[in-house]
Length: 203
Ligand SMILES: C[S@@+](CC[C@H](N)C(=O)[O-])C[C@H]1O[C@@H](n2cnc3c(N)ncnc32)[C@H](O)[C@@H]1O
Image 1 (tube, rainbow, N blue to C red):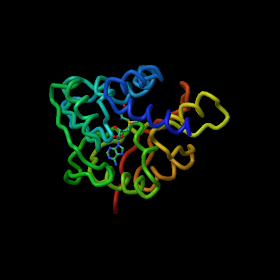
Image 2: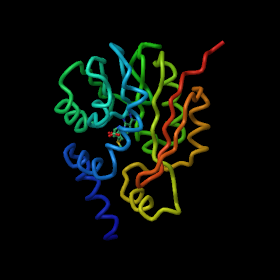
Image 3: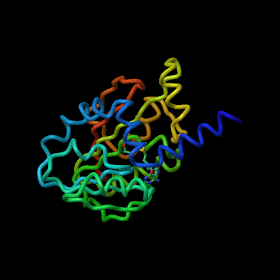
Image 4: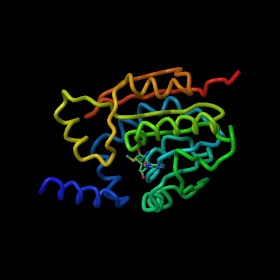
């Protein structure tokens, strides 16, 4: 009972953009950004959609001249995003499983730490929607379920996302709609999967 109240309190606190950013910095934002950077540093004048953008912690990995749209369901996170990113910014208060954008209108999509907030059916819808709107590539990053690590278990215990999945589960979800061109698995406290993917060509 006490544990449950503590978790609810932790979730309420993390809903505040500043607290969310602080926690993310403690669990390794800089290292994750370092892994993403080589895929994004070369983009020029392109449109990037960040689904489940939260406060836009990963905007800074993109070159200044890209146009950036942050999409999230949580208005509080989007306020944090607006405070962080003022230039070349679009904001969508929307559900990533029903993206209100036209087919193939986005050059690159980021999907970072969103998947474990979604059920299997929602993940399937997310992948379909991303493959529909993305013309170029998807950069997908997710923490993996790693039951043998005490620190990872502790982080999952407090995480608001309640759907940790294994590497092979994520690969099969991605491969329904995308070809994975490059894949990395790296460790900070959790183990993370990073995939650079292209939507499958429909014959
Ligand atoms: C762990 S945060 C990740 C935020 C950001 N990508 C980052 O790494 O800092 C997950 C985000 O996904 C958002 N989210 C959850 N379900 C969503 C959905 N169906 N559509 C859009 N955003 C969603 C939450 O509001 C939250 O901001």
